[in-house]
Image 1 (tube, helix red, strand yellow):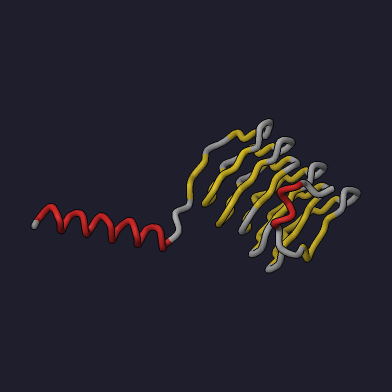
Image 2 (cartoon, one colour):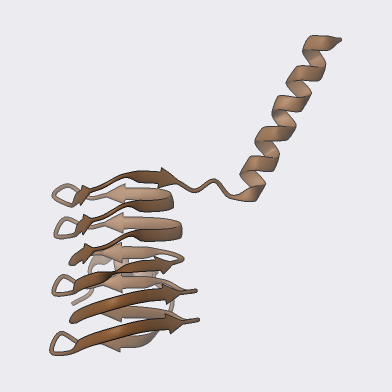
Length: 135
């Protein structure tokens, strides 16, 4: 039921089991796992795990996303998006770090999210290089 990569996921607060179909919007401050069918929208402040049997028709937002099932919709992970060997994403993705295991598939556009501290460090480095060139 859990792959070796899912051990890193924080405590799961909500589980939608493989025999469950859910239609609607799901909002959670904790982590969630979906092994069943879901249609709607998922917004999660924690981690999101889509199990190998999970079939999602939704836009999904979370901190870390691990996909072993299928998502038809756009995905945004503020930290890491991992598509496992059995995982499929059909939609646009945005994330800080992207990991696609051999066999995992993704169809769509991708965008890297650069956090504010990286932007600040990059800007400071550019400014200091500009000052050195002027001197």
